[in-house]
Length: 76
Image 1 (cartoon, rainbow, N blue to C red):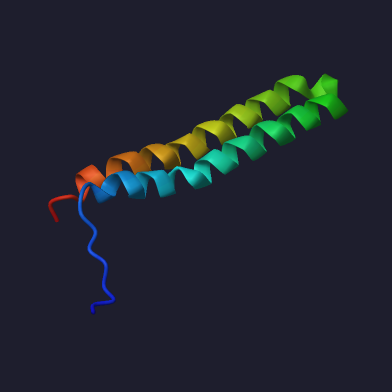
Image 2 (cartoon, rainbow, N blue to C red):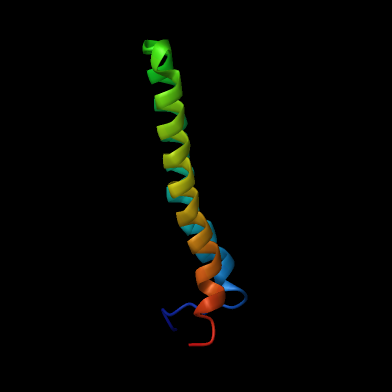
């Protein structure tokens, strides 16, 4: 009786699913805290929104790297 399990199929889909968890949580935190900051200081809306969108773009870049990386390193 063997204790090793065999994984077959496309493992990159599982890898991307796991890689998307972090950016998903990050985006939720960014927008949640951004809305809370705007509610506390409505006069700083422009600055808060700008920083919120910058954080969103950088966080989504991580998700895109997680999507592209399996295709780049598939043949190595």
